[in-house]
Length: 462
Ligand SMILES: Cc1cc2nc3c(=O)[nH]c(=O)nc-3n(C[C@H](O)[C@H](O)[C@H](O)COP(=O)(O)OP(=O)(O)OC[C@H]3O[C@@H](n4cnc5c(N)ncnc54)[C@H](O)[C@@H]3O)c2cc1C
Image (cartoon, rainbow, N blue to C red):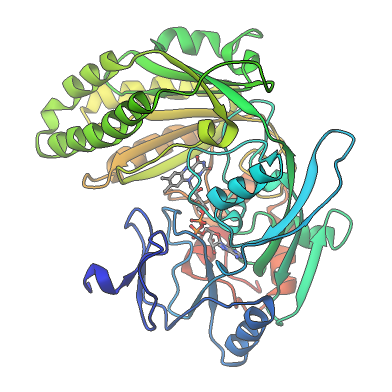
């Protein structure tokens, strides 16, 4: 492998891009040697690039911030980043429900988008736990946050502009090319190169975050209750440390401006979010990687150190936080009421096998939506995400958890590690065949395909 200085990791903006180059994703679980790495300065340049690649018989794969854990962007053809297409193009009028549509270059990072929206008094309605992704990458894999009444990113998309395999720039929305719209707003980059995305945004809001350690059994018992924490909080999630009976719950609820509440003091934010959540956590992971027998004890100590805290801050600062300890991840969407039983089975498997799992398991929730390939398609969903420290093997752990998730009707996150193939996935998505029809109509030759999309969707032009 070439030295790091020659690697293009799109998560690291300061690394100059040269071609040919080696690319790797954030977790280091995918490497690529694209023949060419392109960053078109304009949409016209991007369209010319697509036409040239098609004429030369090559393939094109779009890359965002490289935060998918799968080989989703790997290609030996042209890897293209639209990170120069990252400006806000248009802000619509406020709608009766208070929302506002905003059209923005598809390559914008979520962090930059949130900053721009905040200056306009706007915000994204819901977010996942980091803001490093591009908007195009986030929607293309079905990235989501938590909140039983809230959907993932793709369901908030109102229109897209993309370059199709014939090099044409087309727009699509619920009223204009509706089938292409459904496929393009969550399509793993297989129906075209997204250049602009119109998102539904909401007036800027603050969140009060209440973080409380609780016995896992108590949380699981309360989950199905009509007055349980998933229903009574706007955004509820919890992190459970394997080998313990403790989970850290996080409940985020909207506050109206002037409602009071204080941000965390800077010293406490740095101590807890940087030193304990990242610095000390990295050290304990490195320790248990060398001495796996210590993991249950370390997890028990870590879970006892969890303390309750409450703070208020602008939404993006509460939804997202730094993730500096590199890990590998698999996440499954289950019918919401299967979360408790499935988690109990994971707990039993880990205890039975003594698997070395120093990372907490994350549990989140989302509303059903109508996006064809959404993991929450027409199903109120609970998400169970398992992580493994980057230096540790993940295969046995993820395989066992995957078997449990599959038995509960789980749909794997499109951007995270899993072993499902097109034949397994098709029955889970009622509109899977419709998606393939659209893809095959706009890209019969598989210009935008790669081995990964061949595996999870099947080859183009069936
Ligand atoms: C630390 C960390 C935290 C995470 N947290 C969450 C979370 O809270 N919730 C969640 O759901 N997921 C989460 N993820 C997963 C992540 O959100 C997704 O994998 C997301 O797709 C990454 O976006 P990206 O910009 O890095 O895209 P990439 O990984 O670079 O690409 C993803 C897909 O988008 C396609 N694509 C990119 N740009 C374009 C374009 N212009 N046109 C067409 N297709 C395009 C690519 O071809 C590829 O198929 C996390 C990942 C990491 C590493």
